Image 1 (cartoon, rainbow, N blue to C red):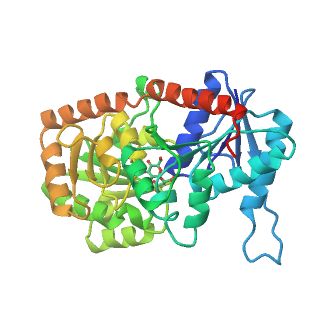
Image 2: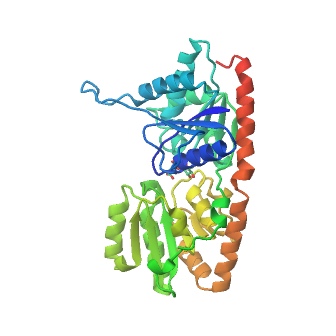
Image 3: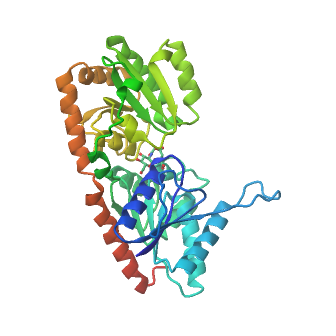
Amino acid sequence: MKIAIVCYPTFGGSGVVATELGIALAERGHEIHFVTYKQPVRLELLGNNIHFHEVHVPEYPLFHYQPYELALSSKLVDTIRFYGIELLHVHYAIPHAYAGYMAKKMLLENDIYIPMITTLHGTDITLVGRHPFYKPAVTFSINKSDIVTSVSENLRLKTLKIFELEKEIEVIPNFIDLKKYSSEFTDCQRTLMANDDERIITHISNFRKVKRIPDIIRVFDKVQKEMPAKLIMVGEGPEKEYAEQLCAELDIKEKVIFLGNSTEIDRILCFSDLFLLPSESESFGLAALEAMANKTAVISSNTGGIPEVNKHGITGFLSNVGDIDEMAANAIYILKDDNVLEEFKKNAFEIASTFDIHHILPLYEDLYERAYRSRFKNSY
Ligand code: GMT
């Protein structure tokens, strides 16, 4: 099938999921067209089956805000027409579902019917989408999607509570590609980051407020008082500076490594013992799943969809948002004993395996088939 995928190309869960899905679909023989404003960070190889179409928004001094939705819907119309695209899959409702719907309507003028699937990822619903400034447009574009999916049951329920929807929402969880992890990295050199006797704790995110970055530093501070340890912070974002400052105040600067954004998180996770995700809200927690696939135990908050991924007492522990004392105590429990740590690591990998792309891809392909068949119905 010829599929156009719209996503954010930057470091962020929704873009990662969209990109990995597109790559896997291309491997299965589908023709994939990414339409976004920059080449997605995880999309290294373009080829016969994978194309990238850049959306340009020329600056014009009259505009206080440049009209990205307009440029995106125009690009979609051109791309869909030129390549004979059969299906549109948009990731993150804002503004992608809105722009996608406009493209649908424009194409219909030329008797081209393009089914649209919208995948909700989290903050498009829980943080941004529910804001009164956006809510009517988000409600409209979700209702106008042919099929709507969410990445967790928790997000499905939240969406139904927040919006007045006429649409069913199907849950298709996020996934990892286990074959990427089957060959051990020969350059998995923890020695570059820590001494042999130190435990390695990792966090990866876009360092926004919702991630509760100071909680990570404070949990680590408590852990490092009990055992030799290093904290590796991967990512960039608005909370990074404060985090660095807090490390200086707590006098743990030497033990915390800020690595910035990385496209090679597996090379970091492969020597991590524990992953911290104390988020205020998290629809799924893809970073935690990626950590688990790398045999890393997880200490997280119990918010949103995280309990669907991190299993309490099995793959790690979950605590109430902000309960740094409990998070630290649980981290120390896991890390202080080699056998306990090994057990949690093993379990983490086992649970991660249930999210392997081979289980999830057929669910998307089934959805695409259904959406494609729906072109015979008038779903406008
Ligand atoms: O804040 C992020 O982690 C980025 C954000 C995004 O939309 O790119 O992530 C959301 O989508 C991910 C992929 O589906 C989920 O794993 C994250 O839990 C979700 N983030 C939040 O809900 C805060």
